Image (cartoon, rainbow, N blue to C red; front, side, top):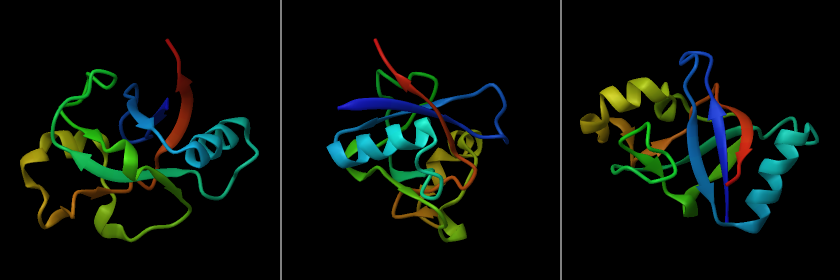
Length: 114
């Protein structure tokens, strides 16, 4: 298990922390941070509508078992992290169907340690 953080230009100064349990995806995230991976660099996963202790800024988190990385994705799953927070009650319906979130501008910023 490892935790990583990402930022989005549309939410300056904010960070979203997510947990990864799959070893291959952990290795992929580390390759993104090292600069070795430059294509599949954006985060996606399924929203869980409850706070996680490691991501206390937000009232939701991503299901660690669903984390993956992408280069391009469909528009229907793209949204700013602050917008998701403000419209969480609408998420998983017409907004972010299936609770799938794929922020196109997500940029891994660090591995969270400690």
